[in-house]
Image (cartoon, rainbow, N blue to C red; front, top):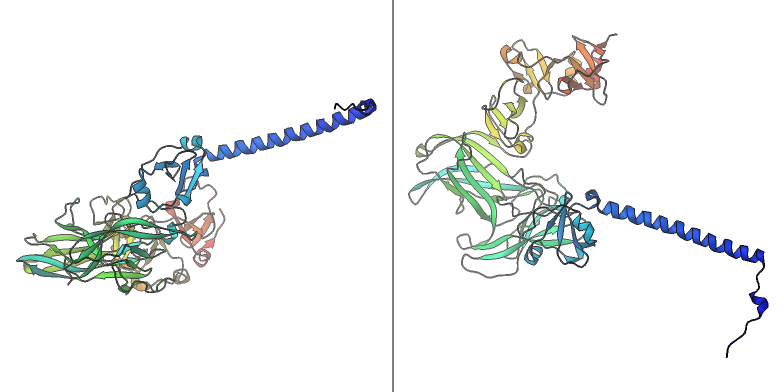
Length: 493
């Protein structure tokens, strides 16, 4: 039945109508403001998401409605090329972030990810191992099957932020065979993944399991451009903690005392040692011409083990070799670890990357005099080794006058004995050089105190402020401590 409403209830006074209109106008305006704010926020989010800096480095993503997974690195998207590659990398679907298709399309393409690609996810950098080879030890000649060979002990240290651990499914083998092995990669967020890193090899000659591609050995002429005389590029190891090399690190506890068929590794601060007496620990040097050679030891030569750096994976022994007469005279050892390299005084070494040359004294380096061509001088070494050799910036002439060199080779007299003593220098580290070499180092005319930007011009034992420094290169300035600084008397301009 139709209900008829009282006409009085439908009647509204003008004032009531105005109040209702005002009420709905306020609601409309508020709704409009909120909408504008939401739209602006959404635009900002979309704008940020299209900015490559918005993306996490080492992030895994896929577009909505698409199963293809990409690895984001330095603003580029790298496609994980197959499900097999996804599995080999040990990726988890839980770690894949979903984003809008247009966001993914806005990123440039990078190299695709394969099973062997060295992928480091966010949070893994500080928990990875860092494998550094020491120089070859216990080097000696031997004869095998009528041929002269060079035997040596190889050692590599794990100086990274986390252990090297590899695992595999249980297996029982009595002959040489291969089985997939996975590196356990730990993340600071508490997760971990198992990444395919190589193979377990049952080594019948050794009677235990090896991990493939752990070390590589090469012998080449000292002046060669990569001409290899003898090599073993894919040496397998039974990984374990053999000796401690750095007891100061917090994780220097022995975790891997044996190498088994399912788990092997090297703890932080520990080294794996492979003795010269073991099978395969040699290079063939039969009929080698007497000359100077470089014995190279490379850890992780194929890059199959995930590390936080790869530029420090080579050590070098430079030696004069005459195998026919059993002569092996070591001329120098170069290791990418502080304090491990050694060279006779006066040896010139040169950086492989920029040709900067140095003179060795007490196993410390001194910059070669500036302005002299060094492109053909000295023993060429990787920069990863050069940077670990301590610096010696003290020289003296035949009269015993001591000078300090800055890192660019500018020499400066100490203004007083107190200035010299304030640095705690060792007199034994002062290199005696000729007057001819001394004058090749330009004289320093400028100083500044550590922590200050004010540059002073020096003359004798006095200093004065330089008001216009536009023509002064930072290379020309000595940065000195407060005692040294106060040993100069300040004079007015």
